[in-house]
Length: 191
Image 1 (cartoon, rainbow, N blue to C red):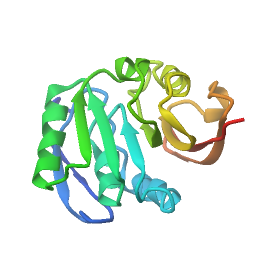
Image 2: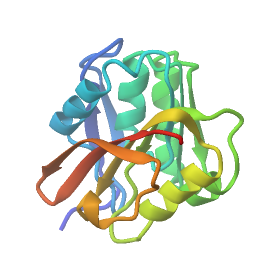
Image 3: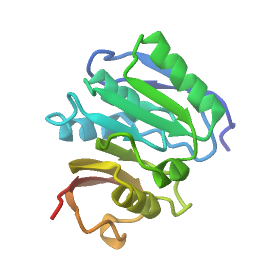
């Protein structure tokens, strides 16, 4: 059995901070998006990431937020319920002298229950598995004004996407499976 709260590392794959390594503390249920999956995802996003406003409500290791900022995202908002995670991510941004990222100590569902100051172009939804958080998070994003009209939403789930009730305005753009995890990229289309 894995030890809880042991230090681990993630690597930024490309962009301004390419090959930089960052430590994070393992938490129960934390599944950092593997390098090869992040590489595939950001290849899918290559035409969209520059200047995007990104949201990562289940930040965990912060791998997706750091990768997005490294590749030119204009702003990223990430949140997590772990004080250790939030402190670590804030420290990484400070080390990088990056003021384009905001890290909040907050529950994702309480964040998404509110309304944003401005909608987001790109959202990373990688909630803890077996807690039935993905569908309510998708609904809250759609219902509470978190998304731009043509937003892209990345999801990770233990259930095949065609078995989940995603919002009708979301269209599957790309998907892959690695092990028991489904990785999907959705394109929002209003109307």
